[in-house]
Figure 1 (tube, rainbow, N blue to C red):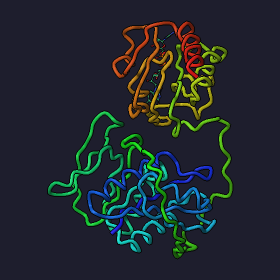
Figure 2: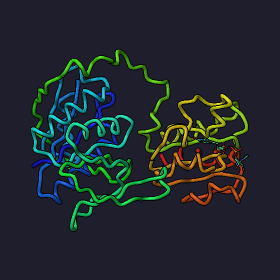
Figure 3: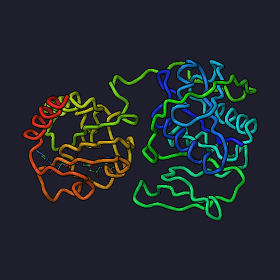
Length: 321
Ligand code: FAD
């Protein structure tokens, strides 16, 4: 029996959230006395795939058909289901993401499995298979007791650390049956936004709100982001006002992020913004109003003017390099 981990590939590498999914799958495999098999799809270098071993995988199944290079949840779910049957997998793990949720749901329909999305902890196997998941955009947790034979878990980002052991995994070619019916709509081209770093994968995000006063004032924020190697984000009004591009909008109606460090500059901390950032490991808030609601969600707070604080933080970050 193998715990099967479906991984997402971006720019030829295993995405960070998928590295965490492998680490999670490997821990579950240990608890179940099982092995860990990773499933990777499309065109990927074998040297990249064998690195799955460093996060705990024993083996990688590689379905290299180029038709599987672009996201296609119907085709991917079909391949995940076939891999699970081949490996006899009763637990299937993947990262929680737009693609992960779609693949998990479709795979569950094929295998008559349960799907638990937004899993935040390793399962409790005492007298069953119970997992904790994040609900209400991170404001509460639910414990779910899974009774189905096959269980699909979509893991919340930052739920587990993907530490590198230096081990490598064996890579095995996998040739699933691909049905033409799954390719009736296909991605022909992917054009990345010109953001230098993807918000959803960023380790550090520096984000600005209406307190930045206007688009012409973003330089100090961009300087700090550059000094920290961070991605940049913003509140909804900022993108609505066209001060920043829409792909930077973070929150309930924007992108949900979970970096190691989120620095909020002149953002009040409305509940709709917090809904997008409360998966962050450490939140630093800079606001001139000591009563700004964001301070309640902050690990560290700086009461002060962003235009005074940001250049000082940038100088300190540069001095640390
Ligand atoms: P403001 O509320 O105007 O706050 C600006 C902050 O900057 C204040 O706290 C102020 O003290 C501080 N400040 C001002 N000057 C300085 C200075 N010089 N130095 C330091 N601090 C300063 N919002 C989102 O962000 N994301 C969402 O996804 C989202 N979805 C929404 C969905 C719905 C259905 C609704 C109704 C609202 C949504 N909103 C969302 C809007 C949300 O309610 C808030 O209005 C918004 O987040 C406020 O943005 P802000 O904090 O940038 O601006």
